Image 1 (cartoon, rainbow, N blue to C red):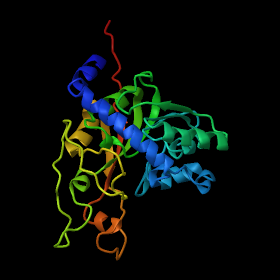
Image 2: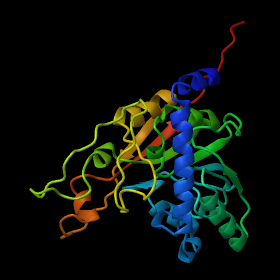
Image 3: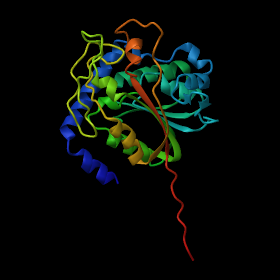
Image 4: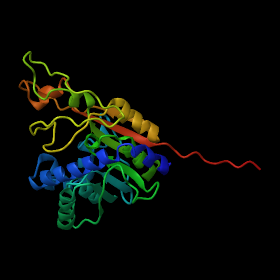
Amino acid sequence: MRSKIFAESAAVPVARAAVVAHNTQAWDRLAESKAALARPAVDEAFVDPRRWLGAGGWLAGEGRSWLPSRLDGREVLCLAAGGGKHGPLYAAAGARVTVLDCSPAMLALDRHVAAERRLDYAIVQGSMDDLSMFATGRFDLVIHPVSTCYLPAIGRVFREVARVTRSGGLYVSQHKSPASLQASLEPGPRGCYELRHPVAGGQAGEPLPPEPPSRLREHGTQEFVHSLTAILGGICTAGFLIEDVCEPDHTEPQAPLGSFPHRAGFLPPYLRVLAKRRETAAVVTLA
């Protein structure tokens, strides 16, 4: 299986490596500038980290909680999640945490928070589509914040996550919605948001053109549009069963035209997915 993964990814090795290097440097700059997504968890979240983890939306939905009844001792991978937020909170909630991120500066924030809070968890530098440093079936839970948009192709990400997730384990991921990435950030002359960019699907495509910094685009990064087929289909074919999908609500009543919450009413910016690793079938030996 792994030889197949590397063979498929070999079609665009230069493009992928260049993108990873570019986005690593971009996120280093964002971390150093204290951008919104590079800010550690606040003090109040550590008062009751389990409650924050549910309320934060990664493992909670309307009317039910997906958070395992006990996190103590669970192996949790916070994937592409440097920045001192997810890793420290899962560690504070009792999990055995590993944080992986490509950006040294984002991981430095994790090291700072871990030292400040006296938390012990593993911090690893690497790309989200190469988890070869981890054993098969190691993790009970993989938490994957918005980041698949920073790679030109994402099938390998899901296959790697499936390999390191134990049978029956959970994979909670959030992605930038393809429709939102395809559309203009500001309304056009007629007051409408306009579709401008084609979807890349499962293939490596051209990065989106640069945009001014906003809640929808991270300054200096290269981002790619991936179709629902590539995201949802990719998760399924990698070996997961999708249990739920939602579009987090970022709308606000009476939001002004062109604002983030106004646009979210027409183009939900994010897609959150709960998936469960398929149970490994038992082998029955007939006498």
